[in-house]
Image 1: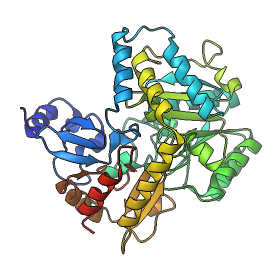
Image 2: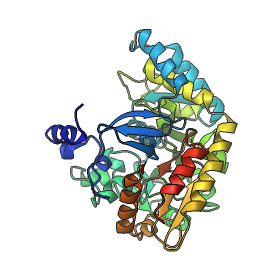
Image 3: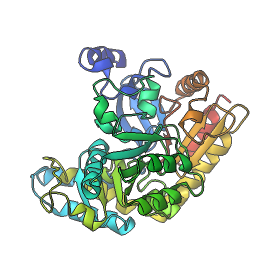
Length: 413
C-alpha cells in the first residue's frame, strides 16, 4: 500500500502547492495534509489506514454522509445506463422539479458544473436584465473565483493571507462594490453613491466563508426592500446553505425571496455541480431563449443529476430535525471562556474569540494560532475538522449520537 507521504511527494510535483484547491494544503493549521482514500457515513480513512470522524464533509455536499447506499445505487445505475450524452435527459428534469418544489423562487433554472460558474452566470443575467454594471458583495463573502467576485473573498484568500488575487484586472475589480456583512446602512450608502448603476447585490444569506455568521434580524429583509426599490436584483448564493439549513434553504428559513439563486454542493450529491435560477422572466434571457450566452458540455450530467435527485428525496424534515438536535449537543460542548460558537442548522464554527462575529472584520479578530493548536489536537484524537478558522464545520445525518459522543470526548477543552 502506498503511504500518504509518498502520495504527497508525487502530488507536489504535479499540482501547485501539491493540491487542487488551496485550503487542502493545511497552511493555516500546520502538519501534513491527509491523503483520503475512503469514506463511509461520518468517517473517513487516509492512505495510512488512519480513521477520522469527518466534519469537513467535502465542504458541504454530503448532508447524508459519505457513500449513502441510495446515492451510490443511483450513481451506479446512471453510469451503467451510459453516463453522459450531451442531450437533455429525464434526470435533470426530475431534479429541477424537486428544486422548484422546495425552493419556489427558482421558477426556472440552468444546471452548470460548479458554484463559481453558477455565480458568474447569475451576475451576467443580472447585468443583462438591468442594463447596469456594478455589483455589491460583502467583505468575506465567497462566490467562487471568477474575476469580478474574487475581491475580499473570505476563507480561501484569508487563510493564505492573499488580499484578492493576482491576474484580476483593476477595471474588472472596480465593478464590484464591498460592504461589511450585516451592515445594511453601508449598502444604502453604496446605493446612494452609485444611484441607478447597481445591477445586483449578491450575498450568502448565511455567511459561511468567514466561519459561520448568521444574518442579524432585518438584514436580509432590508436587502430585499433596498434592491426592489432601486430596480436592482437580489441574488442569494445558496451553494452552501441550499437544502442544508432548511428543506428550502436559507430563503425558506428567513422568509426572504430573492430574484436569483445560486446553488451547488447538495444538489449534486457530492459530485461536481452548480445551478442558477430564479424568476422565469430573468431565466428567459438565457440562450437559446434569450441573448445571454452560457453553455456547458457536461451541464446536467446524468450521473450528477441521479446523485442529486437521490439526495434530495432522502432529505425529509425528520432528517433536519435530527441533525439540528445533534448539532445542538456539539455546540453546547464547545462553549467556554475565550471561545464562542456560531451555528445555523448543520453549519457550525468554533471561534477563538469571546463573542460570535457579526462580520468578517470581527471574524478576523479570532485567535487563529489557538484554532490551529485545537485543530491539531483534534486530528491527533481522530477528528478531522476543516483546516481554517474561517471555514464552517459540516454535520450530516450520519453524525449520530455515538459520533457526537466520541467527538465531545476528544475535545481538548
